[in-house]
Length: 250
Image (cartoon, rainbow, N blue to C red; front, side, top):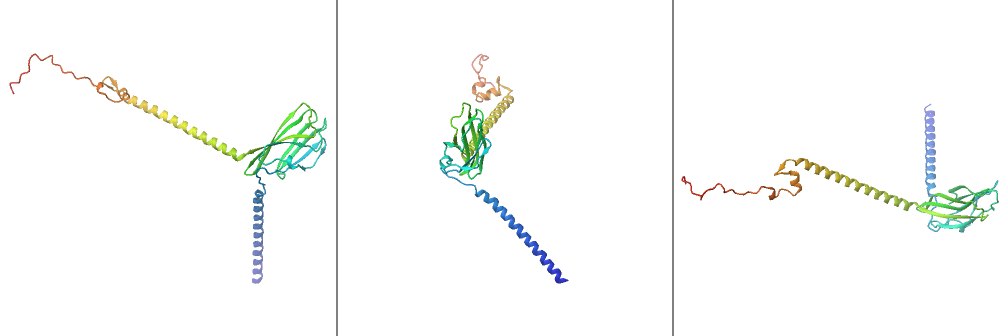
């Protein structure tokens, strides 16, 4: 019985150890996969070609993704305009939409109407890349339409623009610093003004006893006591009738 109990205990401990190792291995795997997702984000240097793919829908027919040639793709950090050739010609009275993806399909631009099938046509498309430290963070776009008829049934005017988020963050930080400095200076000036007014009021209230016809406040404000503030002393000899004689007691 003792031998069977010992064997059961060893088997139980072995199973628990195996489950723990499997759980630990699984956790390490998911952590490694999570960290590798950051390293897979492609970094660029100025002038690198950013891969671009395009797909379209003409009427009820949808085309699959296909890569654009390098001279139609954006160059990292360069603002440029290109005239992208569409796979299908835009037919009168037929809606046409197009979609783009950039950087190994990491950044997708949804369906954009090139023609609504009536009289509205896409005349210009600007794609704006927001980047930081050589990585494309997000992609936005801006469209302009014309209502004067179709000029080019296969061409699409495309413009690539770039926004450096690092410079933008620096500008925002400088603006916040200047605003904080201005606010602090303004509050210091207000506090100094109020403090000065309070001291002036206190000094005027404490000097209301007259000093030779003048209030203490006015004397202090004029620079302190001056000899002119004291009455002049003049001897009076009008009561003397004759020459001074020594006293008999002397």
